[in-house]
Length: 176
Image (cartoon, rainbow, N blue to C red; front, side):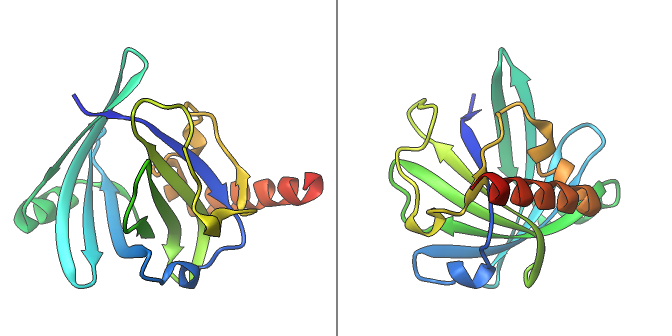
């Protein structure tokens, strides 16, 4: 089974334009949650649209992620029963090596209410082997893996997410 091994990092003082280089691939994501815990996504990357169904579940303290492509017809049928819709702009490293980094801007591309990096860590390691240079001095918080406040589903509540983000930025500036 595919085990997801990722770490999340809350970022500050970054804009989408910072990632509009040849090193990063841009995607617009529209995502909704099904009542049984699954989710559906529509990805639009440079005019190429795809649809995915994902289901995640904890098994013996490991997060198992099952993801499969679905048709546009199935996506449109499932979206009628989804809750908690949101959009985000994602930048993925074009040439990942030891790790794969994704930067998510929650909300409108020009006016994000939360910015978070996810690093898919390969080979069972606990932390990233390297950090992209653009993230230097921009990481303000690294949540514990079990901290549910930092799941995409939790961050669909824009008001709560913006309040959390503001609090983390203030705390970072206070101790930084």
